[in-house]
Length: 395
Ligand SMILES: Cc1ncc(COP(=O)(O)O)c(C=O)c1O
Image (cartoon, rainbow, N blue to C red; front, top):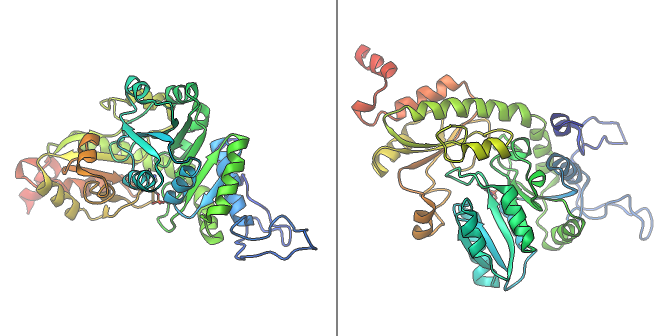
């Protein structure tokens, strides 16, 4: 089965009672036993549920793994994976990871003694130096949130394995359509399915996918023991979203490329972060390890917080909101929103400034999106672009 076919068919359980083409929503907490000790494969929905199983099989097939666990949120997926470790273990983590990941790692450090070192993972020498005898995992987020730095998954996975550590990749920003970390040597993949996988901003969900039998067994034990599983209805929504993942991502990327190019040429923009631009420092690596550049674009406005606030308040089609990966465009201020829980020092180290804005470029008509950004960026007369200058004259 080719990738696009997998999005539609993998795992989808054609119900045997009425031959429904789509996996039904098995909204049941419990399942009747056939006889003592004899079930039809399910006994209790925390442990397993047919709708959830369909999504898990679909995700495992898309990532090329052997097992998956669909959980309530992306943070639940990260919680599940952190429970692979014990007090005294050490994790090396991408220094500009999602703020919620950093908050949870901090909590696990304070409460359970799991050590964490944040590091710029694009510097392989720095990663080698930071490895300790108790290093058990590399937490790799690429492209990183919100600066879209690209990290070399293959080299890092090799380095992790040399030290018997796991290479864990948060693949939320690209989805298995645009990046397949197992093909590059990773051991565990984490997703917030809230984002591109579901794609319609109407559910929160998460997933962990593994490609080793021992990890699969641990995953299923922990999913049941911790009780983090996603509800059948949410799983069904995510399964439905995945069916259009390939065409959606193509549309997101086509728009993001145009938006990034527009921003790069705008005098009100100081810097654009989009791996699809040849000016991006990791453009070549992104082209090599990814199957697409994705729909996320970040940029810094000329000026400071006042100018950034002006843009954030002025867009019409880009809603000021957290999250990403839905069909509608969103705009966000990482400093005060997604990364507010990070300490000022860590934010400064990661390069998250007050003038930084993150866009989740949706699949609307790109001309509307560009016009919207153009009018929002007119915080100085000098920044008026030629087309809008015309309108200004006419007015
Ligand atoms: C890269 C990344 N990982 C994990 C998460 C957490 O996902 P959720 O919000 O579904 O818990 C997010 C949320 O924005 C994210 O951006």
